Image (tube, rainbow, N blue to C red; front, side, top):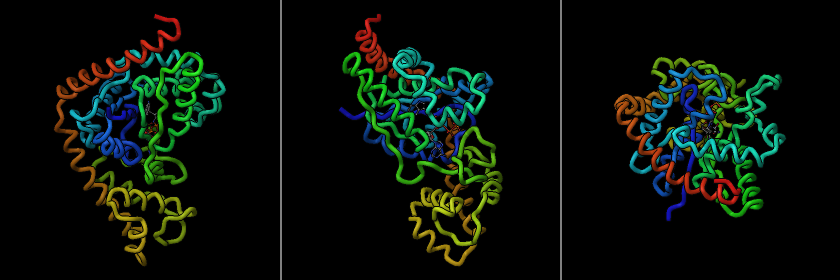
Length: 324
Ligand code: ATP
Ligand code: LTN
């Protein structure tokens, strides 16, 4: 039996190169050796306000992007979270063994909720228990995600162990899988914060940005003081641009630094823009070539397989709890 991986991305905002390098790139590699499930986590996306029409379109667009980036519809199962009701049911059950203090401690919650907690919706607080349900329903071995998800994954493991201890061994304890480089791509306009879908357009390179936009964004990316092209702690902007170059080219950072010795930021940026444009062109082409019908069929089939696996775990959960 193959081991299983599962991961998900929210259909909110636009997919960016950080999502690709931090998560999707690993999914494409791991699907070759694992039983792979990739989810479009729409119920997570509605923890912030979404326009219904736009959300529907974003869900389909994200499914197309998964495939365009290399997820094989025959190799992997692609599905929409809300098409499998077991996620919300297990999410609810996990809420009952989760402490409010554990949820309030999550940095993603603290970042998104801000200071004025009284008006924050409860879904934002319970976001991690739904994510834990996504993972645990499928008896997942490995969860390939970016570094920002470390804390959520640790909570998932804690809840799985807690449940198993209190009610009996139902859940497999999942491990996180983080890329060696690229687990935290930084924003172009501020290299001290992570590149984010919900940020301002200048902060990210979207997978669907056109050539002109990419060139403009890369040219305007913040740089460090000084002029040396070198990855270092006190050079967060250069480290970020060099990391992206390294991941798109396969060339080591040391070799890239060597190649740019005596050259300026402008040259590095121009080359990087060329590389990003060349990398994204086929992805954009493939996205356009996938029809809406193909996606509908694929998502229906994906949901069917996901429901089958999820219902087995949910039945076990209900049984040990005295439900059902
Ligand atoms: P938002 O800013 O709206 O929270 P996001 O850009 O963080 O969105 P998600 O849907 O939350 O995107 O994340 C999808 C996947 O991409 C996750 O595995 C996450 O860890 C990864 N990821 C997100 N941002 C980055 C980043 N800057 N660098 C590396 N990986 C990232
Ligand atoms: N919380 C994640 C998205 C997410 C996820 C998951 C990732 C929801 N469910 C299950 C891996 C496995 C995020 O915000 N990036």
